[in-house]
Picture 1 (cartoon, protein in one colour):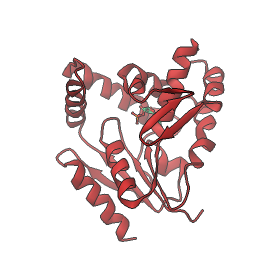
Picture 2 (picture 1 turned 120 degrees about the vertical axis):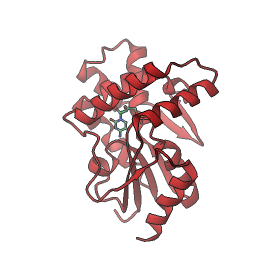
Picture 3 (picture 1 turned 90 degrees about the horizontal axis):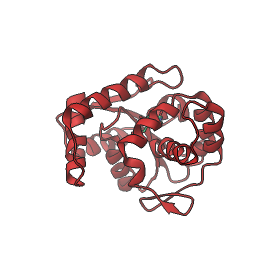
Amino acid sequence: SHIPVITIDGPTASGKGTVAAKVAERLGFHLLDSGALYRLTALSSMRAGVSLIDEHAVAQLAEALPARFANGDIFLGEEEVGAVIRAEEVGNNASKIAALPAVRQALYALQLAFRKAPGLVADGRDMGTVIFPNAKLKVFLTASVEARAERRYKQLIDKGISANMEGLLADLQARDERDTHRTVAPLVPAEGAYILDTSDMTVDVAVEQVLHWYSLL
Ligand code: C5P
């Protein structure tokens, strides 16, 4: 397809979601938050009482996922679940079901459908490697696990949720481990990806860097 895609992949809490949303806004592009699809699938499974290792049952839910995105809101059926799917438990379960090949397969076509004119910014783990290998610009956005834990800590405290730094660090490390070492679509920089380490970088500087790379193409 000739419709331009910018992929932004990276580990949990690297800030890629925020950067992707801002880049999309600046360019007037559509946005795909692919992690939300895995989170929605996890939430559906939890609610349906489906075992998270029952690959076939989880994939069936993913295949028929009633997901809808509308101006920053995320719907599962009629219910707005944007805040619900950000919970750590949902994120951890998302990372478990994301290791199931049939689940990834079930979400494949849904993700491709986000590629619409004038362009798309897609963030996740395998946007540049698997879903949009012919993307115009690929970015791998990362940050040290400490910087990411600190950001996650601040986010939770700001939301009035109590948090514990040690626990967050352990959670992030476990999730990195799962995402990096799984056999299907592991988290690795795509070939030709620009690596952006945001450990000591503000969101706005990261956004400018991505836009700058895009402008050079
Ligand atoms: O990015 P986010 O934290 O919302 O993603 C939740 C989980 O979904 C990740 O930990 C990862 O395991 C999975 N995921 C994935 N592939 C993607 C996006 C997310 O495996 N493209």
